[in-house]
Length: 152
Image (cartoon, rainbow, N blue to C red; front, side, top):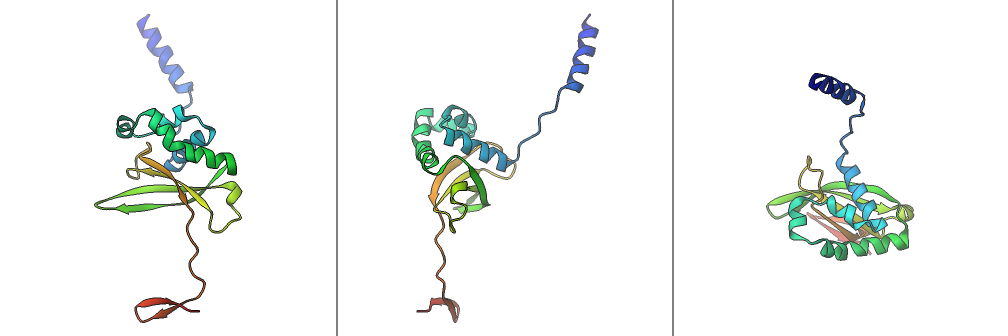
């Protein structure tokens, strides 16, 4: 009978779909969507273990609420804006920046939602935030020696 259970279990394992590992961008998007819907419990589970040890769920909700409020004003649909590496002291952090879809016609976007990861292999969120969008560069820049000077 034990052999039958092992054979039956092996047959079931072959039929069951293998879950696909989500990319970091997908994890970041999913985390932000949870926050924008106000599903703080689900978002909290996506945080890195050391972050959950340092931050209570109540403190996390307080920190996430400004993102939720922005989502109430701008809508919950987001688009990937850019990804990059933020240099901070001796370490660097990989980040994904999203904009609200409702801001897609605005250049630069007024707000950017960021999610950071420890490195390229991590699938747990190390940090997040709502930042003002980048400012436009001055339109008339002229090189002066090694510097750039604004022309008037």
